Image (cartoon, rainbow, N blue to C red):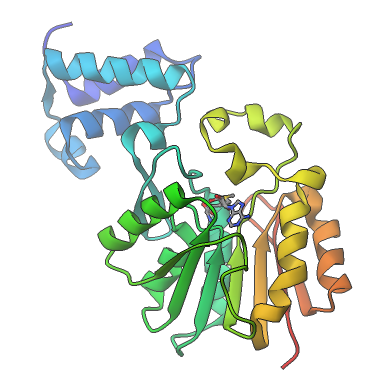
Length: 278
Ligand SMILES: C[S@@+](CC[C@H](N)C(=O)[O-])C[C@H]1O[C@@H](n2cnc3c(N)ncnc32)[C@H](O)[C@@H]1O
Protein backbone atom coordinates (compact mmCIF):
# COMPACT_ATOMS: atom_id res chain seq x y z
CA UNK A 1 0.00 0.00 0.00
CA UNK A 2 1.50 3.41 -0.99
CA UNK A 3 0.56 6.73 0.59
CA UNK A 4 -3.16 6.82 1.48
CA UNK A 5 -5.51 9.23 3.13
CA UNK A 6 -6.29 8.48 6.75
CA UNK A 7 -10.09 8.05 6.57
CA UNK A 8 -9.79 5.55 3.73
CA UNK A 9 -7.06 3.75 5.68
CA UNK A 10 -9.18 3.59 8.85
CA UNK A 11 -12.04 1.98 6.91
CA UNK A 12 -9.74 -0.49 5.18
CA UNK A 13 -7.93 -1.54 8.38
CA UNK A 14 -11.24 -1.82 10.24
CA UNK A 15 -12.54 -4.27 7.61
CA UNK A 16 -9.30 -6.27 7.73
CA UNK A 17 -9.63 -6.63 11.53
CA UNK A 18 -13.36 -7.22 11.83
CA UNK A 19 -13.18 -10.48 13.82
CA UNK A 20 -10.25 -9.39 16.01
CA UNK A 21 -9.80 -7.26 19.14
CA UNK A 22 -8.88 -4.10 17.23
CA UNK A 23 -12.17 -2.24 16.71
CA UNK A 24 -12.81 0.74 14.45
CA UNK A 25 -12.54 3.02 17.48
CA UNK A 26 -9.13 1.47 18.31
CA UNK A 27 -7.90 1.86 14.69
CA UNK A 28 -8.97 5.49 14.76
CA UNK A 29 -7.21 6.14 18.09
CA UNK A 30 -4.03 4.49 16.77
CA UNK A 31 -4.06 6.61 13.59
CA UNK A 32 -4.61 9.79 15.63
CA UNK A 33 -1.75 8.81 17.91
CA UNK A 34 0.73 7.99 15.13
CA UNK A 35 -0.16 11.12 13.12
CA UNK A 36 -0.21 13.13 16.37
CA UNK A 37 -3.45 14.91 15.48
CA UNK A 38 -6.83 15.51 17.13
CA UNK A 39 -10.01 13.81 15.93
CA UNK A 40 -11.39 17.12 14.62
CA UNK A 41 -8.35 17.49 12.35
CA UNK A 42 -8.75 13.95 11.04
CA UNK A 43 -12.27 14.68 9.82
CA UNK A 44 -11.49 18.25 8.71
CA UNK A 45 -8.36 17.62 6.66
CA UNK A 46 -8.17 13.84 6.18
CA UNK A 47 -4.34 13.90 6.18
CA UNK A 48 -2.29 11.38 4.23
CA UNK A 49 -0.36 8.56 5.88
CA UNK A 50 3.17 7.76 4.65
CA UNK A 51 4.85 4.35 4.58
CA UNK A 52 6.72 4.78 7.87
CA UNK A 53 3.55 5.85 9.67
CA UNK A 54 1.63 2.97 8.09
CA UNK A 55 4.18 0.46 9.37
CA UNK A 56 3.84 1.88 12.90
CA UNK A 57 0.04 1.80 12.68
CA UNK A 58 0.07 -1.85 11.59
CA UNK A 59 2.45 -2.72 14.41
CA UNK A 60 0.10 -1.12 16.96
CA UNK A 61 -2.86 -3.01 15.48
CA UNK A 62 -0.96 -6.28 15.79
CA UNK A 63 -0.26 -5.58 19.47
CA UNK A 64 -3.90 -4.71 20.04
CA UNK A 65 -4.98 -7.93 18.35
CA UNK A 66 -2.76 -9.88 20.73
CA UNK A 67 -4.86 -8.43 23.56
CA UNK A 68 -2.82 -5.45 24.76
CA UNK A 69 -5.21 -2.71 25.96
CA UNK A 70 -5.27 0.41 23.81
CA UNK A 71 -4.91 2.61 26.94
CA UNK A 72 -1.52 1.02 27.78
CA UNK A 73 -0.34 1.24 24.17
CA UNK A 74 -1.23 4.94 23.90
CA UNK A 75 -0.44 5.63 27.60
CA UNK A 76 -3.70 7.50 27.89
CA UNK A 77 -7.30 7.16 29.03
CA UNK A 78 -10.02 9.77 29.41
CA UNK A 79 -11.96 9.63 32.68
CA UNK A 80 -14.64 12.11 33.73
CA UNK A 81 -13.39 15.46 32.37
CA UNK A 82 -9.64 14.75 32.45
CA UNK A 83 -6.99 12.92 30.45
CA UNK A 84 -4.97 10.40 32.48
CA UNK A 85 -1.52 9.01 31.78
CA UNK A 86 -1.80 5.25 32.13
CA UNK A 87 0.80 2.49 32.32
CA UNK A 88 0.65 -1.15 33.43
CA UNK A 89 1.30 -0.14 37.08
CA UNK A 90 -2.27 1.10 37.28
CA UNK A 91 -5.74 -0.17 36.51
CA UNK A 92 -7.27 1.41 33.41
CA UNK A 93 -10.05 3.62 34.80
CA UNK A 94 -13.49 2.25 33.88
CA UNK A 95 -16.54 4.27 32.79
CA UNK A 96 -18.67 2.70 35.56
CA UNK A 97 -16.31 4.21 38.17
CA UNK A 98 -17.49 7.66 37.04
CA UNK A 99 -20.66 6.90 39.04
CA UNK A 100 -18.66 7.49 42.26
CA UNK A 101 -17.58 10.92 40.97
CA UNK A 102 -21.08 11.79 39.76
CA UNK A 103 -22.73 10.87 43.08
CA UNK A 104 -20.22 12.75 45.22
CA UNK A 105 -20.56 15.89 43.05
CA UNK A 106 -24.34 15.67 43.28
CA UNK A 107 -24.25 15.41 47.10
CA UNK A 108 -21.63 18.06 47.88
CA UNK A 109 -21.16 21.62 46.62
CA UNK A 110 -17.97 23.70 46.69
CA UNK A 111 -17.99 24.20 50.47
CA UNK A 112 -14.48 23.22 51.62
CA UNK A 113 -14.19 19.64 52.86
CA UNK A 114 -11.64 16.86 53.20
CA UNK A 115 -11.84 13.78 50.96
CA UNK A 116 -9.79 10.58 50.81
CA UNK A 117 -9.58 8.43 47.63
CA UNK A 118 -8.39 5.05 48.92
CA UNK A 119 -6.56 2.93 46.33
CA UNK A 120 -6.28 5.83 43.92
CA UNK A 121 -4.31 4.06 41.13
CA UNK A 122 -3.92 6.64 38.34
CA UNK A 123 -5.68 9.19 40.57
CA UNK A 124 -8.83 8.96 38.44
CA UNK A 125 -11.43 9.48 41.18
CA UNK A 126 -9.66 11.92 43.50
CA UNK A 127 -8.15 14.12 40.79
CA UNK A 128 -11.42 14.29 38.81
CA UNK A 129 -13.24 15.40 41.97
CA UNK A 130 -10.59 17.98 42.78
CA UNK A 131 -10.76 19.41 39.24
CA UNK A 132 -14.49 19.98 39.80
CA UNK A 133 -14.18 21.15 43.43
CA UNK A 134 -10.86 23.02 43.76
CA UNK A 135 -11.82 24.23 47.25
CA UNK A 136 -11.66 20.66 48.61
CA UNK A 137 -8.65 19.13 50.30
CA UNK A 138 -8.10 15.81 48.55
CA UNK A 139 -5.88 12.91 49.65
CA UNK A 140 -5.13 10.12 47.17
CA UNK A 141 -3.53 7.01 48.66
CA UNK A 142 -2.30 3.69 47.34
CA UNK A 143 -0.19 0.76 48.53
CA UNK A 144 1.62 0.71 45.20
CA UNK A 145 4.43 3.25 44.96
CA UNK A 146 4.51 2.78 41.16
CA UNK A 147 0.83 3.64 40.95
CA UNK A 148 1.47 6.80 42.96
CA UNK A 149 4.17 7.83 40.47
CA UNK A 150 1.49 7.72 37.77
CA UNK A 151 -0.94 9.64 40.00
CA UNK A 152 1.77 12.27 40.54
CA UNK A 153 2.18 12.78 36.79
CA UNK A 154 -1.57 13.05 36.42
CA UNK A 155 -1.78 15.54 39.26
CA UNK A 156 0.87 17.71 37.61
CA UNK A 157 -0.52 17.42 34.05
CA UNK A 158 -4.02 18.27 35.17
CA UNK A 159 -2.85 21.10 37.44
CA UNK A 160 -4.65 19.89 40.54
CA UNK A 161 -3.15 19.89 43.98
CA UNK A 162 -3.91 16.60 45.72
CA UNK A 163 -1.86 15.06 48.55
CA UNK A 164 -0.43 11.68 47.48
CA UNK A 165 0.13 9.12 50.23
CA UNK A 166 1.78 5.69 50.05
CA UNK A 167 -0.08 3.55 52.60
CA UNK A 168 -1.86 0.28 53.29
CA UNK A 169 -5.50 1.38 53.26
CA UNK A 170 -6.20 3.70 56.24
CA UNK A 171 -2.98 3.06 58.17
CA UNK A 172 -1.40 6.48 57.48
CA UNK A 173 -4.34 8.61 58.59
CA UNK A 174 -5.69 9.98 61.85
CA UNK A 175 -9.13 9.21 63.22
CA UNK A 176 -11.89 11.75 62.60
CA UNK A 177 -10.18 13.28 59.57
CA UNK A 178 -12.41 13.09 56.51
CA UNK A 179 -15.82 14.26 55.36
CA UNK A 180 -15.82 11.74 52.50
CA UNK A 181 -13.94 8.50 51.96
CA UNK A 182 -14.30 7.00 48.49
CA UNK A 183 -12.81 3.79 47.18
CA UNK A 184 -12.83 1.54 44.16
CA UNK A 185 -10.88 -1.31 45.80
CA UNK A 186 -9.90 -4.66 44.25
CA UNK A 187 -13.09 -6.73 44.30
CA UNK A 188 -12.70 -9.59 41.82
CA UNK A 189 -12.42 -13.22 42.95
CA UNK A 190 -9.21 -14.95 41.80
CA UNK A 191 -11.22 -17.52 39.78
CA UNK A 192 -13.59 -15.01 38.18
CA UNK A 193 -13.69 -15.40 34.39
CA UNK A 194 -13.79 -11.59 34.08
CA UNK A 195 -10.03 -11.76 34.70
CA UNK A 196 -9.78 -13.39 31.26
CA UNK A 197 -11.65 -10.53 29.55
CA UNK A 198 -10.15 -8.35 26.82
CA UNK A 199 -6.86 -6.88 28.09
CA UNK A 200 -7.47 -7.64 31.78
CA UNK A 201 -4.42 -9.95 32.04
CA UNK A 202 -2.24 -6.90 31.28
CA UNK A 203 -3.56 -5.05 34.35
CA UNK A 204 -1.99 -5.34 37.83
CA UNK A 205 -3.47 -8.33 39.65
CA UNK A 206 -3.23 -6.52 42.98
CA UNK A 207 -5.51 -3.77 41.63
CA UNK A 208 -8.21 -6.29 40.71
CA UNK A 209 -8.20 -9.37 42.91
CA UNK A 210 -9.25 -9.65 46.55
CA UNK A 211 -9.63 -12.65 48.84
CA UNK A 212 -12.94 -13.96 50.24
CA UNK A 213 -14.68 -14.01 46.83
CA UNK A 214 -13.46 -10.47 46.17
CA UNK A 215 -14.90 -9.07 49.42
CA UNK A 216 -11.88 -8.86 51.75
CA UNK A 217 -10.79 -5.30 50.89
CA UNK A 218 -14.38 -4.04 50.81
CA UNK A 219 -14.89 -5.58 54.30
CA UNK A 220 -11.70 -3.99 55.61
CA UNK A 221 -12.60 -0.56 54.28
CA UNK A 222 -16.24 -0.59 55.41
CA UNK A 223 -15.23 -1.83 58.88
CA UNK A 224 -12.42 0.67 59.46
CA UNK A 225 -13.44 3.80 57.50
CA UNK A 226 -15.97 4.80 60.18
CA UNK A 227 -13.23 5.76 62.61
CA UNK A 228 -11.58 8.05 60.03
CA UNK A 229 -14.78 9.91 59.13
CA UNK A 230 -15.84 13.12 60.86
CA UNK A 231 -19.42 13.34 62.20
CA UNK A 232 -21.92 13.07 59.29
CA UNK A 233 -19.08 11.91 57.04
CA UNK A 234 -19.79 9.32 54.39
CA UNK A 235 -18.20 6.34 52.68
CA UNK A 236 -18.81 5.36 49.05
CA UNK A 237 -17.42 2.15 47.58
CA UNK A 238 -17.58 0.55 44.16
CA UNK A 239 -18.24 -3.21 43.97
CA UNK A 240 -19.44 -5.89 41.55
CA UNK A 241 -23.22 -6.06 41.01
CA UNK A 242 -23.46 -9.55 42.54
CA UNK A 243 -21.73 -8.31 45.73
CA UNK A 244 -24.34 -5.65 46.45
CA UNK A 245 -26.35 -7.60 49.07
CA UNK A 246 -23.24 -8.52 51.02
CA UNK A 247 -21.83 -5.01 50.78
CA UNK A 248 -25.08 -3.45 51.99
CA UNK A 249 -25.12 -6.02 54.85
CA UNK A 250 -21.61 -4.89 55.81
CA UNK A 251 -22.71 -1.23 55.92
CA UNK A 252 -25.59 -2.31 58.19
CA UNK A 253 -23.40 -4.54 60.42
CA UNK A 254 -21.04 -1.66 61.02
CA UNK A 255 -23.96 0.66 61.85
CA UNK A 256 -23.75 3.16 59.03
CA UNK A 257 -26.86 5.23 58.41
CA UNK A 258 -28.71 6.46 55.28
CA UNK A 259 -27.40 3.40 53.43
CA UNK A 260 -28.03 3.50 49.69
CA UNK A 261 -27.20 1.51 46.58
CA UNK A 262 -26.73 3.11 43.14
CA UNK A 263 -26.86 1.60 39.68
CA UNK A 264 -24.43 2.32 36.86
CA UNK A 265 -25.45 3.22 33.30
CA UNK A 266 -25.90 -0.48 32.48
CA UNK A 267 -28.50 -0.74 35.26
CA UNK A 268 -26.13 -2.79 37.46
CA UNK A 269 -25.77 -2.24 41.24
CA UNK A 270 -22.32 -0.64 41.40
CA UNK A 271 -21.89 1.83 44.26
CA UNK A 272 -22.89 1.62 47.92
CA UNK A 273 -23.11 4.58 50.28
CA UNK A 274 -23.32 4.97 54.04
CA UNK A 275 -23.11 7.89 56.44
CA UNK A 276 -22.02 7.99 60.08
CA UNK A 277 -23.93 9.79 62.82
CA UNK A 278 -23.40 13.51 63.21
C1 LIG B 1 -9.52 -1.30 41.37
S1 LIG B 1 -8.03 -0.38 41.51
C2 LIG B 1 -8.72 1.25 41.48
C3 LIG B 1 -7.81 2.30 40.89
C4 LIG B 1 -8.50 3.66 40.70
N1 LIG B 1 -9.04 4.16 41.95
C5 LIG B 1 -9.59 3.55 39.67
O1 LIG B 1 -10.77 3.55 40.06
O2 LIG B 1 -9.30 3.48 38.47
C6 LIG B 1 -7.61 -0.65 43.20
C7 LIG B 1 -6.40 0.11 43.71
O3 LIG B 1 -6.23 -0.24 45.10
C8 LIG B 1 -4.85 -0.35 45.36
N2 LIG B 1 -4.66 -1.21 46.55
C9 LIG B 1 -4.70 -2.57 46.62
N3 LIG B 1 -4.47 -2.96 47.89
C10 LIG B 1 -4.28 -1.84 48.63
C11 LIG B 1 -4.00 -1.61 50.00
N4 LIG B 1 -3.85 -2.62 50.88
N5 LIG B 1 -3.88 -0.34 50.42
C12 LIG B 1 -4.01 0.70 49.55
N6 LIG B 1 -4.27 0.55 48.23
C13 LIG B 1 -4.40 -0.72 47.77
C14 LIG B 1 -4.26 -0.94 44.09
O4 LIG B 1 -2.87 -0.69 44.02
C15 LIG B 1 -5.10 -0.21 43.01
O5 LIG B 1 -4.46 0.96 42.60
